[in-house]
Each structure stands twice: as structure tokens, then as C-alpha cells.
Length: 191
Image 1 (cartoon, rainbow, N blue to C red):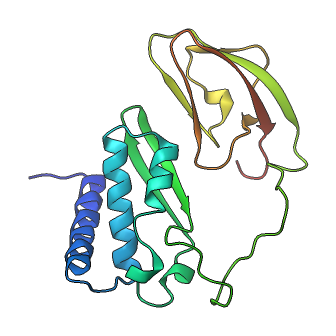
Image 2 (cartoon, one colour):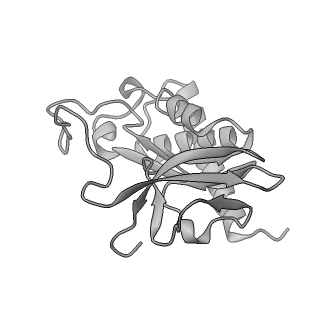
């Protein structure tokens, strides 16, 4: 059997997740590698089944609580990111605090300040109208350069140098014939 590197990686992840499942079944606590493999495998299967990205992120954060992990794992793994294959294509799935908060006294604990954080503060934002003139749904992820947008999508303004003003790891779907008003933000740095 000839496997691509991506298929080999997927099988390795599945094997590690199965080991985690066996350990959980006998009541053993999981280490960081086991826990990450377990959550990533569940994410990849949910994406394969076409579950919505936001629902996957919600479910992933509920899979393992700190009581099923070895001490220090929640603090050691503050985030999980995995590229998942959805029916519409690949998207980055970002799960913050996958194992619950590490606790106030945990090494490396992050305590958020009160209030809201402005998305891409200091960068130019503009409103645009996008229209999907194609026959298929078009997904646009958070950091995709809009100058490379699918040719079936029309915009009412020039989009070179911009991306959608949505949180990292999120995406917007334009159904065939759908028109949406969205906010875009100027890209910066090496983007």
C-alpha cells in the first residue's frame, strides 16, 4: 500500500488516539501527547462528517477535563490546532484551553484582562459586499488573502491586501447566489 505523507500522519495520530482511548477505558490518566492525539482524532472525524467548525471547537473543549489528565497537562497544552478536512476543503481548527483552565496557580497560566480585545487593532477596516455567482458554496477562512479569492466571488471594492475581519481559525461560507456584507481588514507583516 502506498500512502501519502498526510495519510501516514493521519494513521499515526489515529494509533496514538486509540492508545489514549484504551488508557481512558481502564481509568488511567492521560499525558499531554495522548490527550492531544485523542482530541485531534475526534476533531478530524467530526470534520470528515461535515460538522460545523464552531460546533467542533465547542465539542473538542468538552472531551477531556483536567480530572482525566496527569497533573500539569492543562497548563502544558494551552491550545490545540489541527488542519482538518471538511467536505468543503481543509480548514484550521483552533481550540483554546482544550482541557479547561489550568488554574490560577498553574505554571504558565494566562489570565485574561477584563473587557474586549479589538480585532487587528490599528489596521484599516472596510465594509465590502461579496456575491457568490458560482454554483457551489465558497468558504473563506480567516487569514486567506482576498486577492486570491475564488473567481466565482465578486466584490464591490478592490480586495488586494485584505483578509476577512474574523477571528483566527474561523471561516465564512457563501452559498451559491448569496450576497453578504462583511468587514475586511488590511493584512500586515509577512502575511
